[in-house]
Length: 386
Image (cartoon, rainbow, N blue to C red; front, side):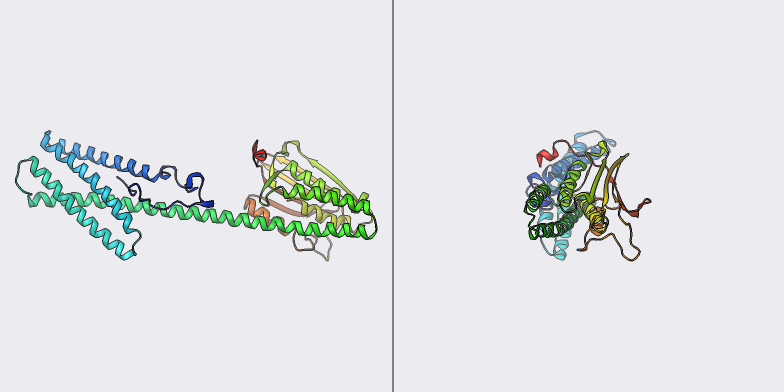
């Protein structure tokens, strides 16, 4: 039987903006209830058709005659029409204060049951050519009609309550997603000021030393790096190939400062090129390696970036040949307080518990960080569409 209000009286208003898809429909609404009007008529038709079949079988089991089957058909049609009216009235009560709405619902149910029972008893009496409405027949009809309408009403309110709870859950999921995206954006934006500060400071030093050619070259490479990185949304995921290209742009800038002291090595599995990861995830690790491995050593250091595809997991590593962990200083941090902590937070926001982040001293000296994330392949045409 029907469990939704009639057309024009929706159970819950659809939510626009980020909570809805095209056409204003809720993003997470169950497919059957996407079109509430259609769902109402389907349930109404199926419910009352089933009721007619059951009542007909029960009546025909005692005797087969028009006097038996016609009242059952009339009863089902009356029930169908009365519940249509009930759906409209129930929907109008939803905007009222709770106590008043409950009282009006109960009063409406009792009134509808009395009216239904009277018409039902009258139809049975008419088919049997009995004048008036027999009290005993009315009481029996009242019991049956009250049971039917009470069950219909219970289903109506039960499914309405279920749909309201579902929409609230969907809205909470969307809000959580938006909060996660905002957190990711905040973490991503932390990196840019820090990197710009260091680079501009280096350019300023070159200008003071009157090394204008090198300063111009660094500015040009900085512009290329920013153009490349700012083209992506702060919450976007990029491919391993794009991340490696970004790192190479960044290292080209840093090589202007350190020249031969900075030696970079990339060991990237060809099969992992299309894997996706948060943009600029590895850049803070490379910057950390430059600060703690290249800068303090006269001969500099080698920085190695590795990417491996192992089954359905992607292993990312950044290691260096620097002095490693200092006994008196915790190395994994950047001067502005971002870096390792930033990456940890971004991984949590992007993958939840489905990731691994290890910081360790290398056996041959130096420092290394290894990240393990699930393999998510680039969708063909996705970047072009963006």
